[in-house]
Length: 251
Image (tube, rainbow, N blue to C red; front, side, top):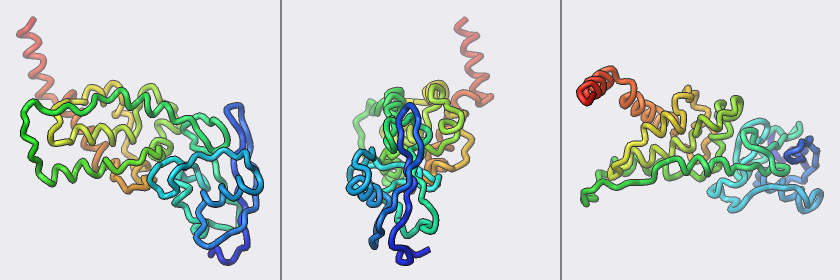
């Protein structure tokens, strides 16, 4: 329904902290071009100055303002009010996969601990740095990630099954892919993917790809190729036979 049909809208915003909370309704005047983050700022300015909202650039590039709008993980700065059904309350809740700090602000520090598990870029010993443009383009897509963690939030392995200790999540499969597929990187991260990041738990539902604001093809271009590398490294029957022979010779 068009925004012009309404003088204002109702936002049903979660208010609370680690101990719990409940949604509170706020009436917000609408203006042309308004996005959800604008509406939240209006609430802060005129009704609830203590409302906790994380944001920075308001341009869809910092990834800070992630929340769940009408049950879908989104960047509030890129979600237009006139694209939402304004004849009913618009629900705005914090990301479900992460602990609530206050109101819409969640504790995403776990992600940075996962990042430390990934071996950094390790250039090959030769000094030739000429690269085919197609190889450069392949990894450039992954560099677009703004770390909004919407993909982490929507992933059922984290959201519904709380496998934080066994699973790295799509954001860090994208980061690993940016290193593994770099034409000058010489390291193998297959063991880390298998044991530390638990890539085998991903069943490629593509929900992470659907919510990515940068349109990164997370599943097709990062996760599936990485799964193939892990299978080639650890489950290829011919390679398994070769390893057994080598182990027997050493013994």
